[in-house]
Length: 255
Length: 284
Image 1 (cartoon, chains in turn red, green):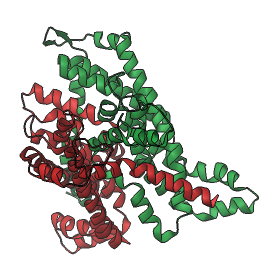
Image 2: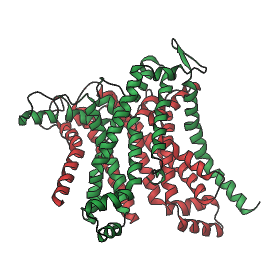
Image 3: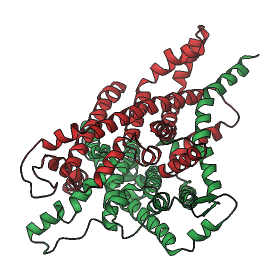
Image 4: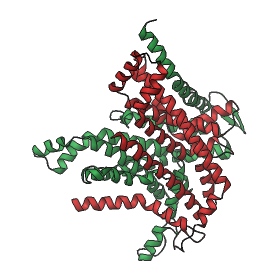
């Protein structure tokens, strides 16, 4: 049983890492095709990718949309969670349901709905439109994480602050938010990675100022190339760095 | 004004931005799409009205029915395989790996989860393609004489999906397993249950809500995905999202695309009700 477990673990890890390993290995391919045989090491493809203005512009767009849309989603989600966790309102359960609902709808449908409305009002596809869509997909996540993190302990601290005369914005900013720093940071980082990686909304709602996944998608059309591997490896490196930072900064401290 | 009323007004104020955003950019667009799905095309012009023609077409046209069926088949197969593969992985990490290494083991098991999702499908193309790693290895070992046609097939789509969802499900199932008190298993064994009985009668039922929640998420994300079948599936058979994108792109047929989306959403809603007894979406 024990041996079987470790064997299963090894096979599972191999399966999970196989495509990533191949991706990274052939980003160093000294040849035109990122498939075996391996012809030797080169950094040429990385230089090519980093020198590609379109890719770098897309990377900047992606970062901008990810950070801004996540900040908006987190603010809206946190405020709504604060309200619903604190006061019993008529229809609380319904409102929680409405705020969580976009989580169960395919991104494609959210994108198509927004496209329909934007077309109707004559709003052109843009980075802003994409950002609006990304707030829609990340708001439920930010709301759910904030809501789940609010407990009695926190409610008493907020009440104490209010009794001592703090106005509501001070309570929120100086008591609630710092007490929830770890879950709020987790929600923010998760939103950033989801937005950073999102394809279909960005694909349908941008035209010229595309995001990175859309730019990579158009690279794929010209067939297999080690340049795509290099770009993919860089994206992986960035995401993994983010995840490890999150792990160290947020979860270690939360223990 | 008393304190409670003031509190409530403040609460509404804090809720309003999130509710307005969701209303304006989620509910309104969905209603607009629903309305548009009853319009039809006259040449390149959208004619609004109440015409169920798009839905009739979806349920009679073999291409459309085929796409719906392909999507359902692929999604169900992917969901089942992913749960079956992920459960043991999560269990081994939760019960066999020493406690201090568990976080690291879990982090490692899901690390490729964070590769860009377009790139992940592309990577599988490199692995499964005609000149890919798998074919080269098998040819080199003499297992096969001709390269296998794995890429550009349904098998490739399923492999690409399973790879992603095994990681997602490992996370959600692990989170459930680790919350179980070891006393349950001990009690069952004290009462004479063997390992298998302990698993089927105690552990599995207790983790079922987590498994169903993960499976539901898998279902939703899988059936709505365009990239994976588009990159890995070749163009031999279409899924529903591919068909929707085709309507948008080639013919600009927004009404039909909207109707297809409504059908897609109806399928997800059915899946939701089928699994709602065990679903804990607020505890993902």
